[in-house]
Image 1 (cartoon, rainbow, N blue to C red):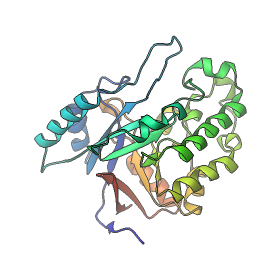
Image 2: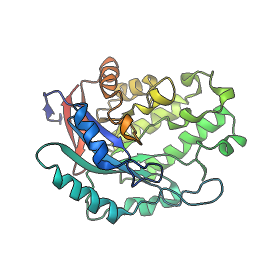
Image 3: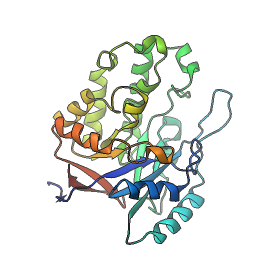
Length: 278
């Protein structure tokens, strides 16, 4: 069944963080003002929740106070009702040890959207140099995708997979000249994409990759494979953690998606995708 498609031009930022995330101090009202000023159609807050996330010093991080988050953003949304579209979502860190808790998260279905992301590989975030002490570029990247493969086969409570090649943002300097496409285990990536498509889930194009490197997350290679395999559900997000990056390069993301053969993107409302033309 083909999706209903809105033909009006739209620009959504559906991956962004505010002061409710451990790694952001941004005021949601300031972010809304920025989104309005640059002409976004709407935005979706997706603050972090990662169960049992540990920093290298073993201190905890990224535990979201869900009730406080929902209550505050619900009030903010009411204050802007009728003049700007505000959605409430979550970026859920996916790990196998937390699979049961993740699938039972938000039982009252208060969220519009859940991004599932892999931030942790075997209990350590590749953001930290400590991860690379036991991995070279090839083994580290493959192990990251093995973790994703396990998660997509075990966890169902998410809508799109976030920044699918996240790990390439944080390759140590000695590996920065290696080709992203060469490092990508395409056989494994395609199995992940097939499973997402079979389960009716999507991916996002995350523009932070252009700020942090030289390609979107995921790369054009992966976007093209997703399209070739029949993927249709795709969202756009800046991964902003401050006002300056709200809506960053969303129009460029539309162009890249068009070049990859996509005709539309989508936004999730009450956990259901709504499609619109690029």
